[in-house]
Image (cartoon, rainbow, N blue to C red):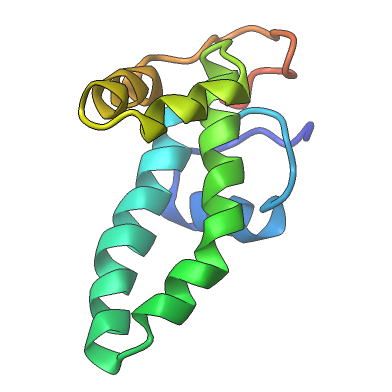
Length: 116
């Protein structure tokens, strides 16, 4: 993943599907663009069409990997996703981790994704 990320919706959606089982790092913008687009906009359309279960099934692996990459950008292990299994308190902890600013330098999970 040597390609730098431009913080655009199109880059985020492309990375979501192209790198859906890849590891590395994901910026805040990449994570939240995908969350906004797929979990809110696309899901509302899929519910209207009655395809919400199939959509969730198709997005479960890419969403897990994107969340792991987002945690990697903050220097945390993907095992921190397990906080989401703990109701309310765990969700808050995971949300705080996902909202934190990522490192602008290389860490053990790979090089920084943003252009300087």
